[in-house]
Length: 474
Image (cartoon, rainbow, N blue to C red):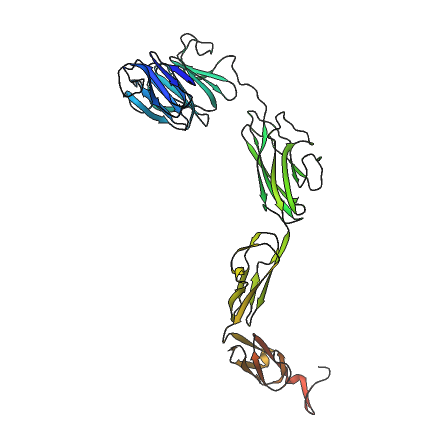
């Protein structure tokens, strides 16, 4: 047997294998075997039980999965199932329960979050929800921060996490310990049982590293969370952050960083981000974070105020992204990365070209870069897509046109210049070079072209043998 409980005239025993056994007075089915006949020998009622409690004529059992079960007399709602019907077999009442207790005809349960719940007979305010009388047929929340509970005949006691003791319900004999003999509808603190002053307890609860495996001699970013896991507020002091440093090393090493933390209330957290931490050379490394001031801990419990985050510094490798083919376009994604980084080369065809393929083919999707790699994007010129741009200079000097204005790869376009009155054609610039007449032929075109027809104002030139000559001084 691991535990036992006794009601007014029935008994409960919990075996080490988690089986629950019961016997005795059973008029209200408090044994839980499905009958109302007295049981003279123990009978098994449940399995998987970790705790047990008994009221006057009802029973409670807590299973290992956190569910709370009740059976027996229910005249005042002490089973918590929302009815006043006696239950000959266990019924589930709550989940997420950590502990429970039974009074004469009322029940109490602590959930895993520290909240206290109560239900049942409330003639003397033993439920503690601020009312009396008026029985509670389902659980109602009474307190938070509770770690232990007990039930008297018609009063209730709890201990909070801060060490304080609270009581409520019937107080005709001073059983609440508040210095009076008056019943209390709500929890009151027992005189002489105040909160125990406990120190703060600062813990490094999380370290996130970016990138997870940095390149050799690169820098990394660490985000560190510190939590006050104690029961009192306090100032943690400085948070020290070391990268690639041994545990026994002194503070102040190359690359060490620190940040002063704000005062933290009990249960509160602070998060600090450190950037530019040195990753170190290739190999396995350790990132260290600890709450410290001048390398001296500020708390006696230093078992959790420091934490480590292993990482591996890897070689740097290069991705080169090149182009090939008769067309043109832009590529991206190249650069130097830590080995095993996931990379995605990109390629976008220019106007008049189409993207054809990647070489090697694996470059066409995201892949892990494990060594220096070259990815080549092939672009192919599109038929009729090379554009010929023609411009007159000055614009008032004349007109210029090229036909066709868009040609296929290897094609030809003919450009013609016509001077306006008062101007003379002076020659070509751009992709059609020289003064070789007013007609320019562009042959074997494999890219976009631009030509400029130039003109001269006749007022600024005079005729000369073999052509025109600019007037001196003009």
